Image (tube, rainbow, N blue to C red; front, side, top):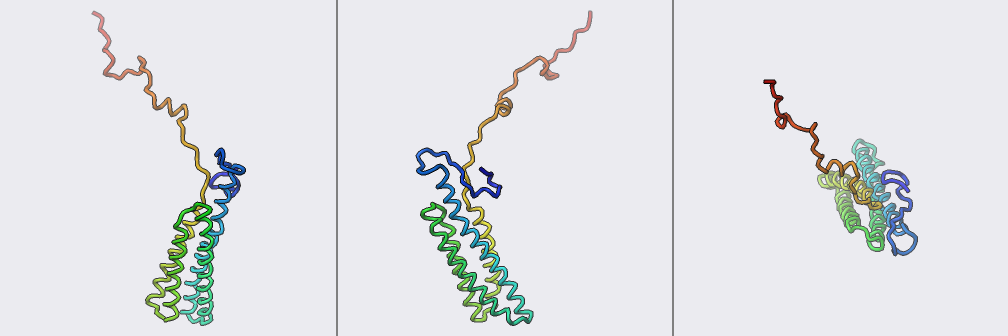
Amino acid sequence: MGTRDSPRRWLVRSTGAPGAGGPPGVAETLRRWMYLPYCLLTSAVAVTLFLQAVLAGQFLSGTFGSLQRHQDGAALADMLLITAFLVAIPARWPGRGPRWPLVASLGLLGLTGAQNVAGFERLLTVHIPLGVAIILLAVLLAVRSWRLVPHAPSPPKTAVPSELARAAPAPHTPDDRTPDDRTPPRSPA
């Protein structure tokens, strides 16, 4: 019903598995839909954390109101990460998905907590490099989460007749002789 690269990849795809229970493709579709909120949340986290760097730069250049917005952005990023962690739970257990989204969300939440402490304590030598690392990890998490969405299995590759013909040895014909196989013509005596 759509290829992997098409925008319709979220639609039902029949798995064709007999005895899967329910209409074919429903379980696969539910699993696919379980990942969509996680993908959206991790993307929102990455954008929010990138804006944190912009707000910090504005504060350092003299726009002092940006410090409050920087603090509010940190709280928003933390709330989004908590929500991403909670959304990853049903994708893992009922959805039989991988464990790493839970670990990654929780790990990034721990790093942002340490970042918040460093910011409130005015430890800029820790706060700024940790912020750069957190932004990088958040972008990597967002990219990886969009690759997490399961797709219908591709059919096994089978040999087509042209590949079979290439694999089989060609029959030997007189025209296929090499120059070494040819005998020189006899001279009339």
